[in-house]
Length: 196
Image (cartoon, rainbow, N blue to C red):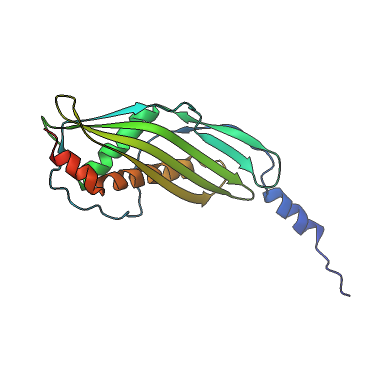
């Protein structure tokens, strides 16, 4: 039987690459449109809204958790900045680029942020996941509810552990996918077109 001989220097170098500390992190929320193109939503026959409002209804305000894949190490992830404002910026940016335009009058789009969660799985590098759940309401100028529905956006990423850029990219992709799901909904379009 042959013996496998591994040089001590190689073992030391390999172990030095593994993450051994997992600290809490705060992620500044800043919406930047995804660089990889998402599916382009279909055109809406009634592409105007008077206003967009976001309400943060989360009971758990923690953004997520970092955890080591093979050690009992974990830490909290918090959001730096106004989460509702970030959602509003992202959805406004997405729908203005693809589907909707602001108008002086007409329906209001209200988004209730139900959950927003990230997970970072760390070893030598890290895997990132994000999920956002929104309930959307289309309201007539009188306040009458014309439509309500729930959308979810998910995204994943991979890179260096604790990377603010990877967190931001993952969160922004999840938000853009939720906005895409909203705009692509025939029920949303119908509610928008019959909301006066």
